[in-house]
Amino acid sequence: MTRIKAGFLRYLGSAALAGLIGLSLAAGGATAADDTPAKQIFGKVQLPSNSAPSPIGFYAKGCMAGAVAIPTDGPTWQAMRLSRNRRWGNPAMVQLLEKFSQDAVQLGWGSGILIGDISQPRGGPMLTGHASHQIGLDADIWFTPKPAQPLSAEEREDMPFTSMLDKSKFLTVNAARWTPTHAKLVMQAASYPQVERVFVNPAIKKKLCETWTGDRSLLGKVRPVYGHDEHFHIRMHCPPGASGCKAQAPVASGDGCDKSLAWWFTKEPWAKPVKKPGDKPVKPRFVTLADLPKSCAAVLAAPAATEQSATFGTAYVAPQPQSGDAAIQQVIQAGNSDLPDTVVPVPLARPALQ
Image 1 (cartoon, helix red, strand yellow):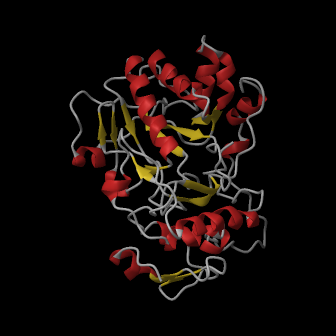
Image 2 (cartoon, rainbow, N blue to C red):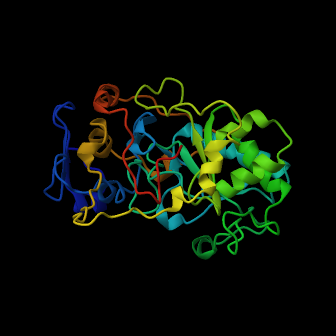
């Protein structure tokens, strides 16, 4: 049995690593085969595993080993909503955010960026707010520049979002709020080769299609999706050598300013499901630990790193496998063979991101 943290143990009861292959997790008397929602397990973990960085599984069905945290404050960024404890990610994501924050300043985006959710300390499903963000390769950026005067912890919790939409019109960008610098910021995010997709509201995608005069080959990376009018979402490719990471299908060729975008402006995406007479209510089914790659149990059972050691800094060096860690890495690589190609279904309001 490996001890993780007192608060985590009180919630889970105990965690056992049984031969690293026949893994099971005792969660308050529950095992990996029971129906305890995985979001309740991962949502309680406060610190990352003390192991080499590994994204495990798919963006919306996985977990993360060896996460690092972006510092709450940097010269060109601030992390928001600190109480959520979601500023953890793969080192490649944290490096990208630091680079992006510097480039944002050069574009005239205030004194930097405000960073929303990345992932939980060990990834996995979240208690609220996201279907993805599970493997440390997704991050949200506010459509609000970092102010010159740093925000206090209280202000980071209470500061409201600013929508880029005109709420009086259907799927229309607010012309008084949206500026060419907003467009440059989104397209800068899409310009990095390690970025796989950038998710925005369909109205924002339409605005970019109508007005962007730069490299239009990058527009294909910018994908329309529900919400995302107050922030945009950066998704990275699986890092090189990350054998446990399940890649998303490549974006279609072209700029995406086509029928796939026009669909969002029809009634179909917004129509409520039609219930047939006699249909029985569908009982919600939550993702459990058994639904995730088997190696996610090993990630939960692994010893914890300290927040100080796991906070990314300019001198940060990714930890190398320690004694016992190599065995966990073997499980991470082998345990994903059970992961199906399909994405976990999510409600209409939060579809699988395209």
